[in-house]
Image 1 (tube, each protein chain N blue to C red):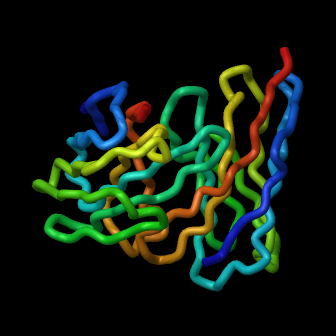
Image 2 (tube, rainbow over the protein chains, first blue to last red):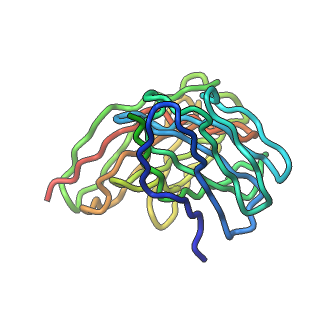
Length: 115
Length: 109
């Protein structure tokens, strides 16, 4: 099992450019999440998908869109990148909502710099 | 949303026990207490969780106060590989985790 994989690992964009961060999981999990982590800060939830076909906003959704392509894949799109979106982006997955355990498994992260 | 308070940083000597505190005075009856840790340049990883009773697993122990307003993560013998940021998170029966800034643990050889 690869667990949660993310591509790319690193990316540099210019202000105004667009890009899509890809995430895939092979654990047959229902729920998937996108977080961002700024230097010296904890993780903040951008969007999540409780199950295939649904997406919901998290704490900091502005400037992002998501697509739950199928049960395995959950992508994050920046339509017009801004320097404030420079961050490390983590994707995570979990079995499903409403469970006390619901351990989240995280990918290795994508380090994004917007110039 | 219930929030947690943790010290910014702690130090421990190698092979000694470490007690990482967390205050969560606004916890509700259905909030689970989760602990994750993040090693340098990696994504967070699950450590342990509990609701009311103390819990043990291969990585750590979780001691929960009787009133549930605080909890303590216990690493029984700190190793250099335990140097990480430890996050105490309250998880309601829903989807969202709120990570906070965590406690940065330094292990001294």
